[in-house]
Length: 139
Image (cartoon, rainbow, N blue to C red):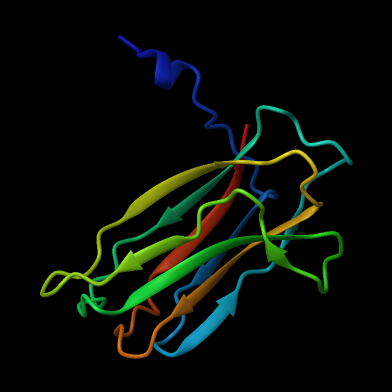
């Protein structure tokens, strides 16, 4: 039997309204290609889903990979952190690496049109370049 949470979850995706990026090498940053939400109004019920894979080489517990959701009015520039969105910090876990996780973020009133994910890997957090982080609109 479905629970209230699963019945009302926003799980529909559109392949056009998502973007992915490989986790950068240690001491590097990378930003995914942005996608544009259609129209000037975002549905009140729309969320962004972030899928972060397990990072088996993120084994130093004092180092982290940081994921920020950004938005902008224009495709080419002016990206800033999405207000109210959690900055996701994935700390290393000794011997096993960090585990996979998912986050859902409600799109706030006044959010701009273009969305992307920015990933920062600290120096010494290991090479996780084979792992891909995905940001998708859920409605």
